[in-house]
Image 1 (cartoon, rainbow, N blue to C red):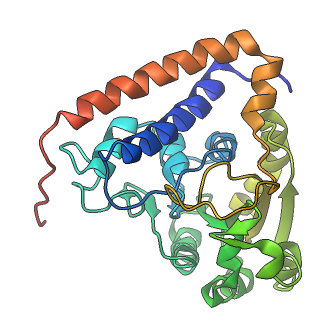
Image 2 (cartoon, rainbow, N blue to C red):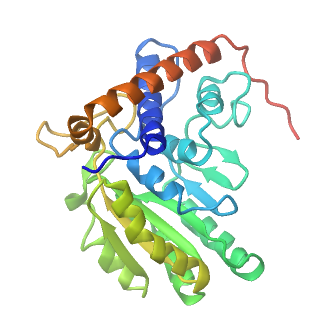
Length: 293
């Protein structure tokens, strides 16, 4: 694998160390509720980071910590939100899955974001040309009717909508082959929506291939579905991994670390130290207090 910039690798490993810390905090009884880590999928939002603008809208999902951190690089605010501590992004009422900050929203409801993103994209087309709405979904979300209603209108109205599919081969506990007839590409093209598939975790290659396609969404509005063939390393949530031992779990970082050991070790240690410090500091804060607007 080609060497990444220190900035890209630092963000990738910040996300990874953050997710590992969450799992450790759950094991220690320091967190309640649930959380869905993106271990193994970190490169997707990091690759898109330079292709999205500050005025673009981003709609995330239940597995959205990496999306948020790639957008804002704010592990303090996100951890405070999950722990219900002062300084939380949404004063502790959103938790792991439901965040609102500027033009970023996440939801744990499958399929909910696409109709909303399509509506926002319609407004952007009318009032903010050149700005797009980006919605992250999983392969399991293609079992929701709202996906097809949104794609239908996005295609008819030529909306600036970027749909990013993180296809990790399993929807909670159901392998794709048992819940998806046909292909995501076939379903997108049935609406006349352009589809682009990415099967490598190589960030420079991803950006080079996507840059002109994303620019086309901005300048010649029309939806684009980008499907990442990826792997989820961790459980669906914090401890409910039902996959058989031979289920594919390829780790991009294992290959990268083998190719670039010195850079990886140095930056990973810095990321781990930073997250450990943040976790200790956030845990010492008083509880967040929600105030009605």
